[in-house]
Length: 158
Image (tube, rainbow, N blue to C red):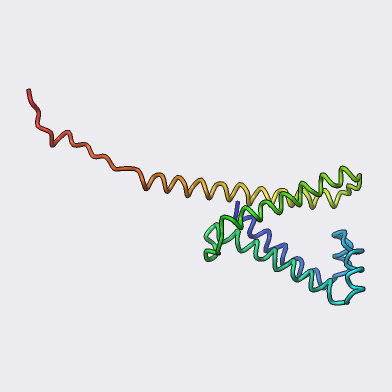
C-alpha cells in the first residue's frame, strides 16, 4: 500500500511539473485558475513557483511511501511522517467533501479530487498501520523465551 501511495505521489509531482507547460489550462482544469491569476498579479512567476513547491511536497510524500516499503533509503521520522501524510490527505478529502456539501458547491471534479485524496490517505494510513503491526509482531516474536524439552535429561524414578 505504501509503495502504491509513494508512486502515485511521484506521478502527481511529475504531473505538476509537466503541467507547467500548459499552466493556464492546468490551473483552470484543477479549479484554481482565479487564485493563480490573482497570485500572478502580485508577481508573474508566483504561480509557477507555488506549483513547483507543491510538486516538491508531493515528491517528498512519494519518497516517504517508498522508504516505508524499503524501495528507498530510510528517511527520518518515517512512522510519524507517514501518519502525517495520511492525516493531510484524509483531512483534505473529507474536509472538501464536507465543505462542498455545506456550501452547496459540489462539482464532479472537486468530488473526484476529494475521493482521490481519501484513497491516497487510506493507502498511507492502512500501510502505516500494517507496518507498525508487522514491526510489533516481529518485536514480540523475537522477545519470546525459548523453551526446551528437558524430559530426556530428567531421571525417571519408578
